[in-house]
Image (cartoon, rainbow, N blue to C red):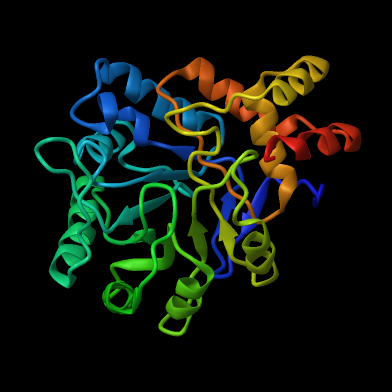
Length: 287
């Protein structure tokens, strides 16, 4: 466990991001589909994100679809200097709210152009190619879809590339085509399949962004986590986020919320330091 604390992290490509970012998925309607119940509240959350100094917003045009990016544009455009966006391509939303894959070259090109249009940008800071299942990688080559994004990067539409829901072998395959600056996989204090991978990426200067850092649609539940939180006078979710920040300096967080109060609670975790004895106790959560 690396206990070095930094407020920012500079990716291999030279982009410096706040380690506490913001995930915009929950700004869409229920089940990330359709418009939110309160659009004004969603706009207020985004403006508070910028007010708090968070410079890294994770989004995708398939949230809604289109809804989240359009709300971001309405709330924040013209964007303040230093605000960066990471988006994902590789999926669509169907009429029933499903998430079918969309990895054909034409679909990927369209997705990049859709993100540019709905965010009102000339180039995307980071585009992550999402290729696996809901919460785990799936075997198979990612060379063809990743090559499409590499071509779009050469065309100037993408500044940096990343991959999501991938294995170590797929990461190596992507790196043989073009440099990557981040990996976005399912990981949290209770789900730690990527422990070794995080350390390998840290040695390469590649950021690791865990999605569902608080357990996702089924929030983390642990008696150990709750007990540690009580002793530290924090919430279990703050402890879970602080644990990730102390796990490795290359971990960037993107917890999502549609509530300003929860946003403040999440950002407060950056100042929560977990003592060594509590870290030892938290090791048992994964078991």
